[in-house]
Length: 245
Image (cartoon, rainbow, N blue to C red; front, side, top):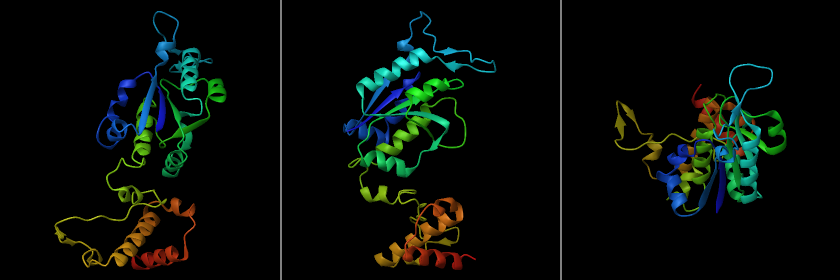
């Protein structure tokens, strides 16, 4: 079972996971979500969870004490979990990271920050890693955590009806997905590529691989810079480039 702990001021945001594929994983008990709200770990009657930053400036920071107590409670429940803070300053969360977590059956504790973030000393002592889902800023880490959880749950065996659809997703092999087509054969004068209509599965597989390589070269060349291509893939990519000059 995939165990994910969530430290958040707004646990209700994660209701979005109770639909479609994520909900299927949770109902099949292939994964379990745990929640800790820092407000429950405050000691004042107002349950204050924010405070002013030293040095002045706009905004507030999450208070260290209640957040640390929440993290410690999560670690007591999930002692082997990686503790991750969702932050635009973190390393980019990728499909390869999601696959590693599922393959190694790792547990996670995801911290959803609010306000202007967390005290640097807490980051240094209580957090294992910082992850980002992109180069932009959200109002809090909850939506980023939900995105990350969705990416993980769909990789669990038995969640997606056809496991091949997961294998063929964009980024699964560090490539973008190939173009997809459905009926009718012609839309606004654009026809489905003939190779997809002939029923030759070997040709279709080769065409799809070439298109995936080519689309990645056109749209995300940075992915190819990090990937070691086989001799066959190099030939397919050269063909695609020649065909699209």
